[in-house]
Image 1 (cartoon, rainbow, N blue to C red):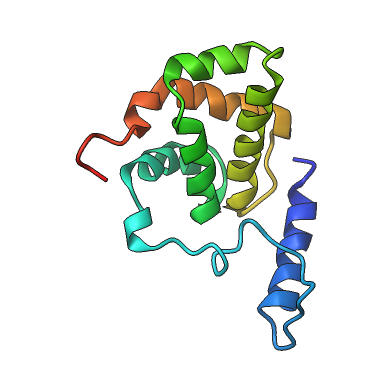
Image 2 (cartoon, rainbow, N blue to C red):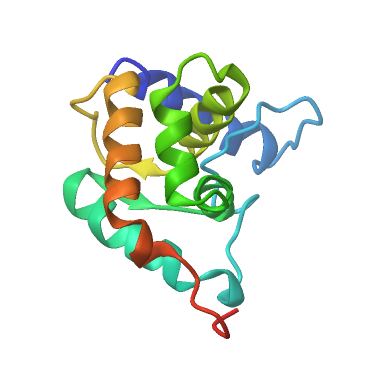
Amino acid sequence: MEKYDEWNKRKRQHLEEFHGEHRQRSAIEDPSCEICFKLREQDKINEIREFWKWYSKLLPAETYNKNTLRGLGNILIGSKEKLLEWSSQKDNEIAFQRITRNLDVIIESVSYSERLRYEIRKLREWILKIILMRKELFEIKEGEE
């Protein structure tokens, strides 16, 4: 994947500048930082567990964080019908951009052990298809919150 080296550089730079010995205010932000975006126990809900189960089996994904949960949650807010409508209608630019932005949040907030074999565009399509096919597994059941 073309972004892997860029993400690794950003991660190293963030750890050094923001969490290092000489903390800098202008340090680069890293959406995959487990320190900045640490999950609390109550954040580890079923929707992310199901998502992570298949995501980490299919990709060299090591860890996720609060940003991953946020991106996934923002996509799952819509009904399956709305997601199908939004993902199939490029003329609904606002909805398309919202989904794309949240897919990017999911992809970039995960730490990977090696370079991904997919382009970001293909990875977005693939994740969205999996979410649409398995959306019922990710939905929070009433009373589980």
